[in-house]
Length: 264
Image (cartoon, rainbow, N blue to C red):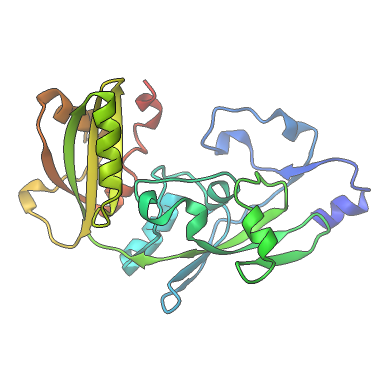
């Protein structure tokens, strides 16, 4: 498609042909009506290399798809942005963050290589040791440097549950201090804060585990369960701490069902 664009004289800008209704956004990309649309229907998990602890995927692989593929194999990726439909390409070309980022950084920091088609039609692989200038420029570039066609991402061993500790905190200063304090603790696999007002929040810390108290297991992703942010709010209203064990994949996608209502 890029070669075709070149043969046509390279007169228009190129952009991905993915329609707006497929994205996790309310934005209407009017520019797509006048630019050369390049269709990148690449949505497969290409390879799981257990020895290197690397998964190679195409750019339209989603977080929901990736965890569904890796978790039964005993693997996960270090940073799993929590909405099912977020794509690898979007999280690289834009950015991605999650409650494990205090350990692993942004989504881009878990990637070890990218493959791109450049404007001259060439296919280029880049990594910290190969075309490194391109590798470090790709994140946050919003597709301006080339079309991403594959990425290699680190894997870590998965566990069955995330043991979550809920703690209500009041006062803006105390909220900031508590979040900072928990983020510095290496034993916390996850740190998250849900802020319900300028002075009220619930700080959650999580640890990956294979063991769980059966009476405290909460499959929060089941369709009949309350939205996660409303469930967490109960601890704030009751002014009490609590501990639960959430199945790992339910935890990874805990905000998927409620995200647009959560904006309230």
